[in-house]
Image 1 (cartoon, rainbow, N blue to C red):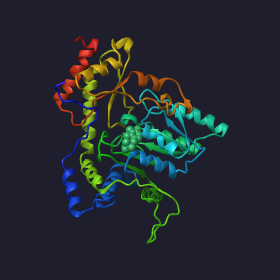
Image 2 (tube, rainbow, N blue to C red):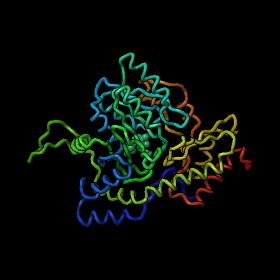
Image 3 (cartoon, rainbow, N blue to C red):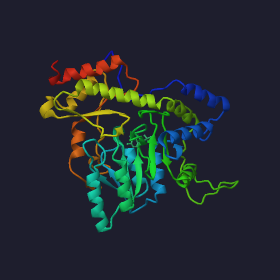
Image 4 (tube, rainbow, N blue to C red):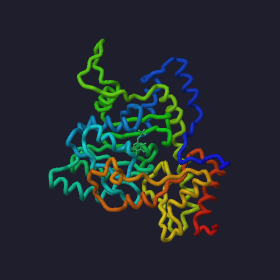
Length: 380
Ligand SMILES: *Cc1c(COP(=O)(O)O)cnc(C)c1O
């Protein structure tokens, strides 16, 4: 264990962040709200093409606000992929609504054929969801045009959980563009970070204005504290936004670096039996936040867990894919629609170290550890 640990996804500063934070200190804008936050929101809007953005304390807070602004409440169904991170579904319960989980396709995003068939059934039975959450898992995206068409036909509110997908595009269109709400996250493990933070984006100015209002305790314009409704303390601090501004200077570089990591794994491991990478459909340009593989034990000669433990023994972090929500004790009472695709992805899937800051030497170390544990690589 003498070698330094290689992480799945570590923060990677661009260089300007500390100077930006110094400026915040010099001007004493040590508060939520301030010029750095305004500038960060403007940068995010320009980059994603989504007209209005509000910076928040987390992606989970952004999703919570999206659901509240969608009018989701007790008795409402919200459909979501089962394979996701808990922060991408827990706010459904904050609102007293209930989740319905759907299976994914082979690339880990929601299965749109299944979704369409189930929406047809739900429409006949009069139980359509109030809102649909789609999740751009590991930076891969579902076909957004098709979701727009389904929304036009069935009339749900579309929330795009793009927490893992800043920088992902289809034919130049950014992840989430066209959704009613787009959720972003700048947690420490995401492609860029503010140390902790998130954002909610929408093309509707009224919705984002309302989101900002709710995120600052729903204070009515009055000299005293006046509240016609209650809100939250959810804004991103100006200090954290200063970090985010520095990170936005390098976002395209970060996407290119993560994609290069992915390409190297593919070039070195892509021919080995039993290992499968997630392909980008044509026109897609994923940020490849994390490179994931599935391991078929029948042909790979080893299994996911053996590989994970071998990497761990070499002081290299890797992880199974997200455990599906319908398999979680906290969510198992809710309905799950689908087959065993996400269950199999959980059983066989592994997230590989994908840091944008990974050096050639570190990458060689990860690959050497993988070659050692993969019989077909001919080294063991
Ligand atoms: C990270 C993440 C979130 C939540 O973001 P936080 O900023 O950590 O609250 C939500 N959904 C998905 C898919 C995520 O990966």
